[in-house]
Every structure is written in structure tokens, then in C-alpha cells.
Length: 316
Image (tube, one colour):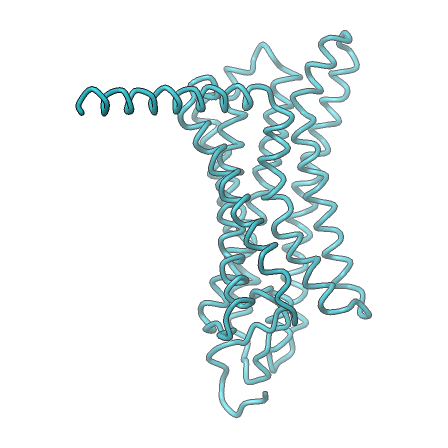
């Protein structure tokens, strides 16, 4: 697969078997439907008009972007014989995948700060978490995700690619693409690793600090208040643990040379879909307000449906 000229497209090798096609398709449907449901409920139910659900709304949107950048292309790679992607399309996919992933962790950090203010300074919560502050935190999260990955993504586009052109992955993963450059990529690796570590460690440390402060505040509460405070944090803590543990597994798989390539791809793909898939499930199962909002939405839909049928009958 060596070429004499510059590479104009890449070939996504992906997995050798097609048995994952129905799994990816079902997962993608659940990701879209679950996160879209949360967005709909938050935007239409007045009782969910709070900072916590505003941040959850944005997290669901970032999860949709995160999966939509890769899964449709992955399904195409498995389903069709056309496994090529243009050089430009590859780098665009790489950038938005990395950016959406970092944005998701930044939003988890913002949600941890929201819980910190709600538990540690409940009387000042409404004066601290104003609409302007919430919008600023959202813009900061999306901006952080857009900027932090920009140097490594731009540098990857500047590398010369002259063959081979086979990406041993199901989408344009940064490490799998950069390794194909016919030039020294050590500096690019340092830049991308530094950006990744900064994004992961900074958000993790801020989340950890928030929960240390929350833990200290909860210790001074009564039993009933402790249970109530913990109830508002459990869903977020579960999502944070899943996100960072899965990221650690991916990091280890790329650092172990003897890892089977197909297993590494599966781990990376699972990492890219597990948090977006589980977010709506965890929040829906653990959050009574969301459950009540779903019941109200279903009731409105049922009433509207009966009203349309009645009007149609009368007209007839």
C-alpha cells in the first residue's frame, strides 16, 4: 500500500467481522433516543428549569455529537465495501471526536461544581448559579473542548502522509492516523499526550476537589440531610467513574504493545459509546424528577392524542 505521491484518502480497516453491526446500530439508536428524550424533557418541562438540568441538557447534546461523529461512519465501514474516507474528512472527524470528548468531561466538571454550590452553600445557590453564570460555564466547557485539542489536530494535518494509507481502526483515531505519517511524529505525540493528560487530569482534579468539599459538608449534616444530599450526587458520581475508568482502560490498551489490534479497537469503540449510552439510563433510573417529567410528558401526549381523535370523530 505504499504510494509515490501524497495520500489523498485513508482506508478504515476496522474489524474483520461484521457481527458488531447490529450491536452498534442498536447502541446508536438508544444513544440518540435516550439523550434526545432528556433534551426534550428539560426544554419543555418548567419544573426542570434549574442549573443542574441545564447542564445535563448540554451533556446529552455533547454525547449525541460525540457518537454521531463516529458511529454512522463505523456502520458504513462494516456494512459496505467502501471503507475509504477523504484526508480532509478524516481530520475533521478526528477533531470533533476529540473536542466532544473533552467537552463532555468539562461539562461533568461543571455539574460537580453545581452540586458543590447546592450542598455547601444552599442559601446562596440562586445568587451564585445565575443564568449568566450558567451560560458562562457552558461556553467555557465547549470552548475548552474546542481549544485544548486544536494544536495536536492541526499538527496532525501538517504531517506528510505518503503511504501506507490503511488506518487500523473503525474511525480516524488520532494515534492510528498519525502513526501513518512518513516523518518523525515524536513531537506531535508529546503535544497530543500533554493535551490529553491536561484535559483529563485537570477536570478529574476539579471534580475530586468538589466532592472532597461536598463530603466534608455532608459529614456535618443529619442523617436525613445526608441521604438527600447523596441522592443528588449518586448519578453524577456513577457517570464520572464510568467515564474516567473507561478512559484509563483505553490508555492502557494503547500503551501495551502485545494487545490484540481487534481487542484494542473494541475497547476504543466501547469507550466512545458507553458513557453516552449509560448517561440517560443512569440519570433516568436515579432521578425522581426526571421520572416525573417523563410521566407528565406521556400524559400530555396521551391527552393530545385523545383530543385529536375526538376532534376527528366530531368532524366526521
